[in-house]
Length: 405
Length: 124
Image 1 (cartoon, each protein chain N blue to C red):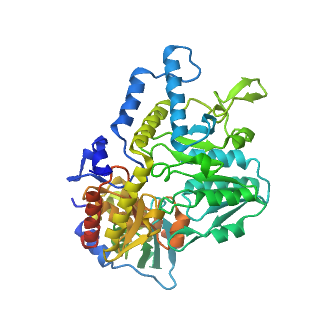
Image 2 (image 1 turned 135 degrees about the horizontal axis):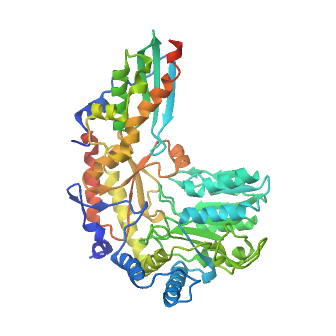
Image 3 (image 1 turned 60 degrees about the vertical axis):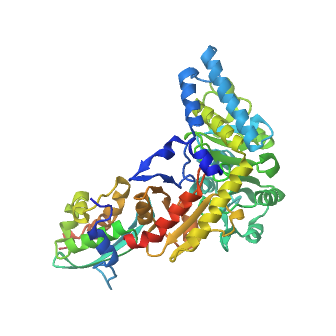
């Protein structure tokens, strides 16, 4: 029994019947489903230990604090960060990127440059547009070439002593391209720039060693890695975080406060104003444990097998165009495609009639859509519970789509 | 009710008002921010009425059918006609089980036509 069949029973929602068919959930890249272990951890926390963290002296407060901080340790271990001070809880990837764009943004001066890439999700583009607009800085983008790879020679030409930040996705949410993080980080560091990685589509699918990758910032979301919505993580290299002014103020991020000034708290709390997502952190802890037990190398191998199967099956259907690298080893757990003469939204609606959930549209990546020359695409994405039978059902349904309209 | 009625399928396959007009009197284009669909409507006016109308677009079957049916209904009508149209009058023509997430596909052609014709009443 492979991973897909083995893990399916852990996900209560997968037993649902949708439009008269057993659900085939191929939209994990948008948001993953939750194993019972995660759902139960959140419920148990609320049933037994909930209170506010850090400030409460009573027993429940201490238990909640203990759970919340234990989640931080679990995340640190899961992504291979050096210390717990480097793990900041956020609401999600978007908030993590915004935090850095605002905090670093304040230090930009006119003429400074930020480099992004053409394949970015809007969440790793708009915050940088805003920072550039506010500070008179210049935004540049690394082009996408060939089957969907970053043009690293063009990247070299964009880099200069004016470059302050290089912000890029680890894995493209549309093409699936796995970008060479260490190489890009190294080149950014050579010109003295900071490197921020959007890891939303990477953390759920491949083994990570953040200390080895060398990025200054690495943002990701809980809900895409089998955890709850409303929580994310911003990893920041300790040396960088220590020099960074907090982006937002509030309770919990301070040590001592006067009317006209305050002294910031230690890391990582300095970057966590207000009551944090406590139950969500507990759920994320459970998700890290669940994935950790499966083993991320095994998860990667399982999902790349599904990607390979999907590329092969869809590639055989007349009128189907596939976007992104054809080599499954260069790809995260997504396959974007279009059916000739069929709008992606119609395709997704017709697949839904057969119980198959895929994403359709521009995937929050309009500049990339423009580069591909399409208004949108369909996108099937996979998780630990995806079976080869589900890929077969997808391919069979896609083959008949055109005849249904 | 079907997700895609015969009306939608027919209009998607063989639209009657798809195309462009040379030297239109009115024209407007807009996008659906949810999905990136784009619809452009052009028209020629005569004696305060819509004498000719065409649409082009990069859009789904629901949006295409909605545009085609709307222009058919608006043709020959006074320019104020579009302002009196509502989502439910559009839905009636489509005869389909339209989900809330696709309502913008239905209404985009109407807002484009309304914007194209806005201000035209006074020039009658």
